[in-house]
Image (cartoon, rainbow, N blue to C red; front, side, top):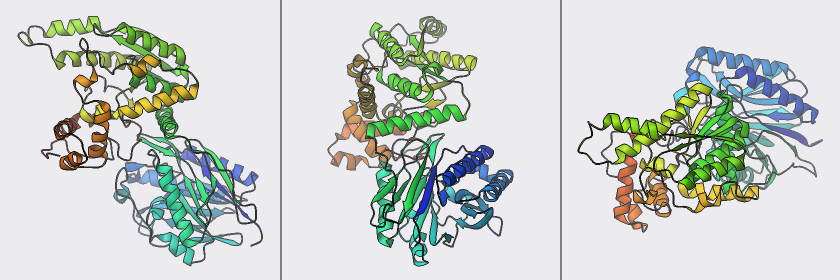
Length: 539
C-alpha cells in the first residue's frame, strides 16, 4: 500500500432535532479534517438527526428533513471521504438506522444497521428495520468496512463478514451512552474484534448530553493486535487523527480520568447540555448546607459558570445555624450569589390552616413534608419569575427508598445526582475538593451526619440503615435484580433487606414523577428500570 491512510474521527456533540445545526457541525468538521490531510472523516451514529430521536422518527417530515440533510452533506463535501449517520428509508419506505458514505459530491453507498438494541434505554425495534448486508467501500487503495454501534456488540456480526470480503479497516460509528467505567468495556470489545480478524478497528462515539443520557466520546483506534493506537478525550468534542499503516502509524492517546473525575465530568456535561440545549438562562439550587446540594452546586458552576447559578437557603425553625453558615461558605467559595428566604411564616400559615382538621393528631411526617413542599413552591416561583431551571438535589439512595418528598424536594426540572448513591456522592465531593486544592465544599459538610433537618435532632439514620449498608443492598436489588434470599445469602441482614425492598417497591409512584437526571450507573432509575407502580411482588 502506497501511503498511510489518515483517518479523522469527528467526535461531535449533535442536538436531537436540530438537523440544520448538525449539518453545519458536520460540514465544518469535514473542512477541518480536509485541512489536516485526512483521507477519511467519520462521524457518530445518527449525527444528522441527533440520537436518540425517539418518536420524532414517527413523523414523516422529520425523516424527510434528515434525508435532505444527508443529501446536502453528500453533495457538499470535497477532498475527503465522509461517513455520517442518518435515518434512511429502504425500498419499501421503512425507516433504517444508517451510515452514508460520500466522496467528491456523490454517494458511494449506504449501510443499514443490522443489529438493533432493544434493552435498557434502547427501543430501536420500535422504530427501525434491520439491515441485511455488510458494506465495504474503497478509500484510495484501501477497503473499509462499516458497522453501527450494536453491530460490534455481537460476536458473529458484520465485522467478520466484512473482513472476509477484504476489508483492511473496520469502522464503527456509535451513540453509546455513558455509565461509569464503560470505556473499559468498549475498549475490550473493540480490541477483541481487532485481534480476532487481524484488522485495525476505529470506533467513533457521540459526545454530549440528551435528557438523562450522556454520551462520553472516548473514540479510539485499536491496532490489529488489540492495542489502542489513538484515543480521544472523554466528555469533550475532538477531532482525533490517526494514520493507519506505515512505520509511524497511530495518533494521540488521551489519558483516562479516575472514576470520581469521570463521574463528575459526566454530571457536568449532562447538566450543561440539558440547560443549554433547552435554552434555560441559568440554574437555581436550594442550598441546605448538606453534601448533596453542595456537589450539585459545584457541578452547576462547572457547567454554567458562577454568574448563572443562584443558591437559595430556605430556613425552617429546625434549620441549624451551622447549615446556613455552610451554605454561605460554599457560595463564597464557588463565587455564586446566595439569597436567604425563610419558610417559617409560610409553614406557620399552612399548619394554622390545617390545625382544626388535624386536631387530636400528633405531628409526624406530614409536617415534615409540608416544610419540603413550601421550599419546593418557593424555588419553583423563582424559576417561574426568572426563567432559570431548578436543579434538585436528591441522590440515588434517597430516590430508591422514597426518602424524598413528592412536590417538595423532588420539585424541579433536572435531578443532577439522582443516579449517584450517597456513598459515591461523598467520594466525588472529596475528589472535587482535592482537585481544586482547597475545601470548596466545607469540611464540616463532609463530616457531619446527614440530616433533612425537618424535626429537632433528626438524622438520616433515624429512618434509614447507614448508607454503607444501604447502598450495597440497593445496588444488588435495583441494578442487579437480586432476590431477598440472594441478598441475605450474601451476608446482609434479612430483616434490613426486606425493609429496604419494601421501601423501594413502595416508592415507584414517586420516582415516576421525578425529573430526569444524568445516567451514571449501568441501571438508572429511569428508562433502564421500568417497574410497575401497582406491584404485589415480594422481592
